[in-house]
Image (cartoon, rainbow, N blue to C red; front, top):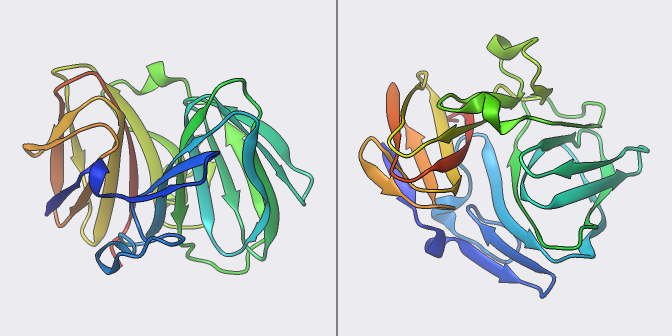
Amino acid sequence: MIEIRPFASLGKASFGWLNANHHFSFGHYRNPDRDQWGRLRVWNDDEIAPGTGFDPHPHRDMEIITYVREGAITHRDNLGNEGRTEAGDVQVMSAGTGVVHAEYNLEPGKTTLFQIWIMPDRRGVKPSWGAKKFPKEQREARFEVLASGRPQDAGNGALPINVDGAVLATTLKKGQTLVQGLGAGRAAYIVPARGAVTVNGAAAQARDGIAVQDEREFSITATEDAELVMVEVAAA
């Protein structure tokens, strides 16, 4: 089962400083058919104006992964963590027992990013934050694991998360094909950050959502040069 969710069909919110597009129910956007995808609960496609951002606010018991597409985001939290994550790189916050954080675009231009929330397998863990650079040239025509709590990814250098799931990314040149396996009882959600692809023949454009389940493997072919982010999690 492969379902294409066009960008135009996503939930929308605009606050002047923030233009947000919601793949799943979030804030004032409610869609009972798009509450989550397996353990994946939130995928927000955000554009943040320069000199603005999210003021301090709390989270708990959620794995929050930020993939920066353009610009950079600066993180600060009440645990004393602070860091700047640039385009193509990733930050992870495990909210656990509770954390208060802020996210600001301190850059001269806009920042665009994917913010991804995955429900943890373990509640009440110690909160943490981390960020890492992932050079894009190392992921051509293969999925690189950026963040993971899957047993098979232990020790591979990915940022840790408290869930049997992973966030991955790849780049494909026009005409390249990547075949990806998907285990029984697993679900995948893919968003092209740029470019266009077909997934088992179904066409998707930049920033569309691609929901995959009950497929032992699927084939992704780039119809334009493309950059894709994927979450792989338990289906239930």
